[in-house]
Length: 452
Image 1 (cartoon, rainbow, N blue to C red):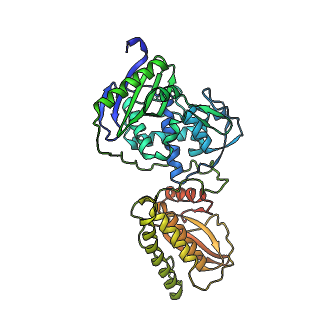
Image 2: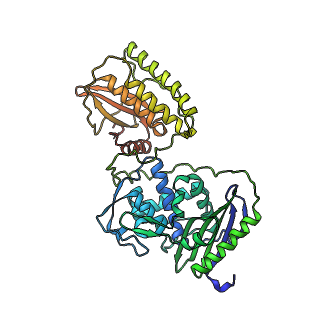
Image 3: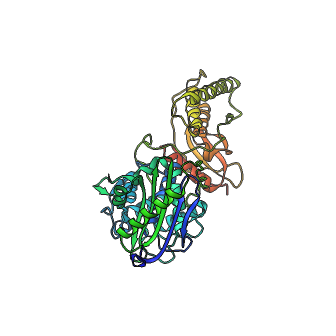
């Protein structure tokens, strides 16, 4: 490819996606403007937020004036408009819409600036050591820089960390809620055998950028190019690099998926007030549960009668055993889903137990309580008319939200208004995350501040 085909410093990287092995690189660590390749991280963080229960694909996002005023490419969102998160994801992934990308950032983190900081923290967790984000869309901004190596790393993580969403990048067009939008990468997708993503990018400062992935048989290659003078020149170079990758990669290689990064989340105090779940969450993915969290369940409070405790524990033991058997033989049940299968079975068993209690309960939201555990934070999941009902809710909540409630103290506090169901002994950040995840499931939750 002649030098005249490049409008900006040229950089490239080719890897075997199965193993991560570098097959070719040139200027791969040079920090350059990523342009709309940025939206790969915008989408990665959004997918992560959905997986961790911060919001759902059905969350209605109110569009701010700031998001609506972003320059093209854009979906055409209006300030004050509400639109489901899934449509913003589609618009950002397929059309590379700047207004949609900004709206995603504001929905997840409360502001675009806070979201950009989260993007940078996530990049570091992914091993993208030379990347700094300043916005959610990729328009040129001082300090907003990345490298061919880092963007290739991000492309590989998108492929393997969120395979359930990866098909978005291969759609030639998609319904984005208010209109159908076309894929900015549709020419390469149509012209190159096996191409199925990932993301284009262009600004005057960056030139024409592209991270592309293609699969042929057992082989999968990812190629990244920065600095093309035109989309035609860029696509031709990417096709050349993909061809090189397929020639150099072995026909058979072990699949070594990249390690999923540590969850970084939002900064304390951001994000929670801007996301409002307006529909049931049964259409969205359940947040993942940490491996090893399906251990023995302990009852919450010593004041439960022996008969009640025995009946509940017997139900729990039987349900856990049954759930393990069901999860082992049920087609399509992945290991990561089995703690959730067990949790649902235990919930059913507890509700069906033969303990004689009064079931007419009234749930109230407790806005603030003092803890009895010193300088700790906690959460409250409602007030109930009897102790057994409060303990049952604590147990059910603990099983459903193991990822954030593991290790916390379950405590029922009696007052003249009823029995309050609390989780105590948490950091402020963890309590905030737990509440946001529970609220995303339409579960009542409020934070409990430290005792002053």
